[in-house]
Image (cartoon, one colour):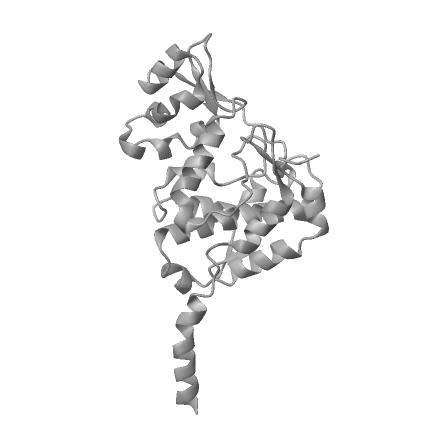
Length: 264
């Protein structure tokens, strides 16, 4: 009998491992309910007040995420792992805000600087984790993916951060989703723009904090090289476009807006 049960479990194990929904359908459903695009489609807001009244859908998705084992995760493709971690980060960030809402900023959560990101308030791949664990030890760091484009996909619930999209990141669309996220973020002149008076390319503080991650991407040798393909997005000025394309525009970093990305 024991051998029979073991055989059944052995045969069912691959099916269990494949059970995770890599379309992240539950997460997309929640995003479409509570995320609103701004007028120009470069930034989004979250209806936290409405979301807090009905958290079951988010809870169901986070349970699905937390039930994934480390063994299951290791069998996935690189893009499946990336999409999983990005969606998990964004969903747990929303969950954290909803637990404390209303707040003016995610930085108001907790007693110590960095508390929202350092607090181990969820389980992921069988361990208690923090948002910093996902970003800096699973996506970045020595054991990470060497993928700087995650910085346009991870959303810190603030107006200064990239937009939270209305659909989940999924493995088969990840390349196009990354490119859309980059172009959307760089097109927001409140966060990135060419200053025709100073001749400087003024960019988000995100590039100051994580500048080293972008050096070497697509063969670039400096941070300025990263912006070269996006000159048409960053400037309407012909001379400015040329300076960006040649990586000759000095970089200046704009203040980060930590106000909650709340829809009010």
